Each structure stands twice: as structure tokens, then as C-alpha cells.
Image 1 (cartoon, one colour):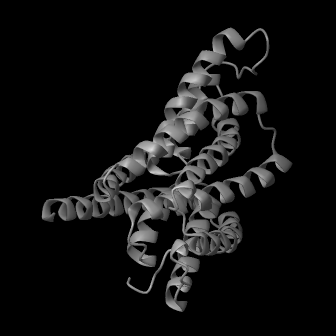
Image 2 (cartoon, rainbow, N blue to C red):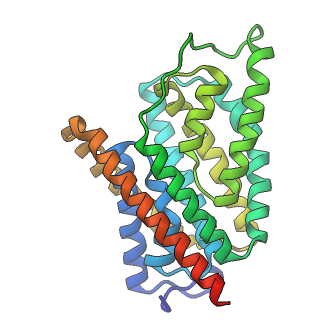
Length: 277
């Protein structure tokens, strides 16, 4: 969309572009509130194909910032109602910050359409993972302390760095990777890992966004609209979730199929553009 400009250009957004950014944020927030995750994976394709940001790198940087703020808001709400395993979450997140910065640097160095094509493949993987039943962890959930550190620290640091690298490279929250990684690293149950994952999503998103912002690849007006729309959508989605709680699994399956289809489209478009150049 030609009427969309980056904030770095010193040109304000058109009314249509602003409305599309706000609507895109609302859609992401609605999905997050309705099914509890997955919506953020749509941020980059929405920014590229709906809002009209021409640079995949700018779309990734903008999405990373918006996802981080949404995760921080979710973390604040979650911390009020559930116990978060802070020691494990903080170690995992700290290890992943370095990985996220390294991943963001690698992502910025890759040609935009090739990066977008790979992003489409990640969307397909996310959709497939959402279709699978949530894993169950056998054994007792162990807190990180002096006794358990020798066993837990290497797993938390290693998996945190690996997931942070992928999160930074694609500018995504990475919750679909963080939750199973925390379950594997610290024997967490799904509910515990979901709460702790918000710490990591916030940390990884801010790290990635900082790297992209340093290179002038965050469209701040669009990011603000995405966050504002996401807040409204999340409220509506959360209320709808209480009404449709019994159909949560069916809604997740439908959304997963949509993510896979969108991933095929994004990767296909990226490959077509690359082939034509």
C-alpha cells in the first residue's frame, strides 16, 4: 500500500493505513484473548500484506515491539492471579536475551523476501504444533534452588539461548517454542510454563525490537496502533473466551488451519518474489 510510510521518513500514516493497523492489532488481541496464544504469529504478515509496510525487516521490528508490550501487559495480569516460577523464568529469559540479539542481527542481514519466505515456513510449523494435543509432563515440578541448580541451570540456559535465537531472528514472541522448552527444562506443567513464558516473550521481544530500532526498522506510529488495537481486542477476546470456553479446542484447531494456510501464502509469495528477481 503506497500510502503507508515509516516513521523514520518523517511522514505521518494515512487514515486508511492507521485504521488497518488498529484493526490488525484488534484481530491479534482478539485471538490471543479467545484461545490464549498464537495470534502474534499473524503480526508480520498483517503488517506486510494488510497495513502495507513494504520492508519485511521493518514489519518484523514493529511486530516484535508490539508483541513485547502485549506480553508485558499479559504478564502483569497473570502475576496477579497465578504463581509464576520467577527463578526459572528469569534464568531462561536472561540466557535468551543474548540469543535474541544475535538472532535479530542475523535476521537484519538476510534479504527481506527470503526472510519472509522462511517466516511463512515457521507459521506452518506453528499451525501444526497447535493442532497437536498439549503435552503432559511426568514427574514433580521442581523449583530452581541451590539443590536443583546443577540439574536445571544447564537446561534452562541452553534451551533459553536457542529459543531466544529463533525468536530474535523472526521477531516473534516464540511462545509456541518457549512453553514446551520450559516444560522440558524445568519439568513444568502447561499452566506454569504458560505464565513463565510471558517473562521470556517480553524479554525476547524487547531485545529484538531494540536491535531493529537501533537500525531504524521500527515503525513507531504503527506499533502504537497495533498495541492499542491489541488491548481492545484482548478485552473482547477474553470475555468471549468465558462464553465459548467449552469450544476452546475447536477454535484452536480452526485457527491452526488458518495459520497453516496463511503460512503457505506468505512463504509462496516470498519465493515468487525471489524467483522474479
